[in-house]
Length: 531
Image (cartoon, rainbow, N blue to C red):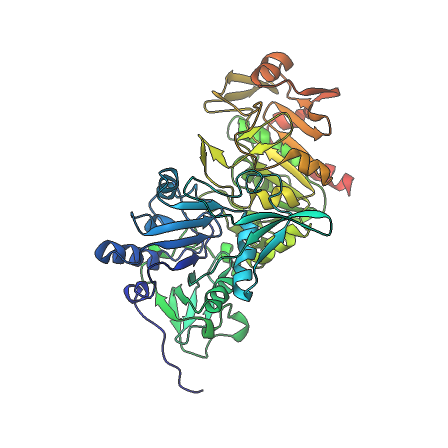
């Protein structure tokens, strides 16, 4: 083999490759795959020298955690950032502060659209034309994705093509990319055998190269050039400028909460274990009730997405009921099959069957590949609109919520009926509200539209809203109450706790009593009967 110059350098030397004013993109999902070692070096350099300054930070997913200072927190020193283009800044509280203080211009776009924009940058295409985001806050007839007054650019435009309305998202340059793998050789070929996701490593590297930019990769270990299996290489060395080997395990964790688990990376299969039966170790909680009722919406052979929040417990219910091999759980981050994990391991799955790139999964979703999505809710109004992106007057982003809810054939929103302080218990198979929540979820008008009910109906979507005490469906006439939990009074516990009066179905019924009884519900038999 011909001699190749080693690209291995220190994190400090890598930090010097990022220039003032760079448009910097980082690949991560939460802290899954985050190149923390290099981000720490960049922050240290800025504190010491004031460089790099005036960066545009591009984040295709939420890059951080409320639990600790990590991820994109390292870029929140005053003056380090000029602009943020992201999908979900909420996990990074310091970033949220910069946005709220108008210290940076901030734009929040759908996660899947962000992924497609990376590929536009790689191919030097002008932008993305899509229906995703229509009727939501990223629609220019509302906010156009602008998250604060400092955001003045028009990066989303309404356009017409062949008599149809579309949203056009303008592409942006990527002049530097920081990505992460498991192993690299000295030439910069990268493999990801120990990582929990494929993410958008190749797409970001190509985007940076298209702008004559810089690509830096963080890895755990180094291999002799030529020793990696060519089919295992996810980023060719020709696209990589620098390799940084991280010798600090806390800066190369597999997920937010796990240093390394071979069951997440697909290197090993976890042994079968008896799934816990809800209610056996203690009383059923309100969360249990929501997830157990939502699981009744599953269908055999369905391709399913489970979001963060209450709905993340659907996977555990399916496992308890023995449904694992009767449908396919997916994560928008790229995993097919397995059991999606809840925080602090959200983004990973135990025993995934296959992985595809982050961008490719959203292609699949946007193309109609998703049958059912289970998503969380902040507010719901009489038209079925949902707010999942604005809290206390601050736009905090939504990740892939817009892409998923707008693309899925059926969307099941999972939420408590009222937030903050709700205490409920099941006694003798009856639901008792022991303490009412302080914050209503059903409001006259949502603070921000993250899901547009009328747009969903015009697209023929089926929409269900599941709470611990009531179930609603979206119809052309509005929100219809279809089910009540046993023990719940219609007027006292439902109508009087809403800011509007819903339509009450003529066929209003009680929720299935099996939901409120400890142990398995027997959904496997139900599911097979629907096949």
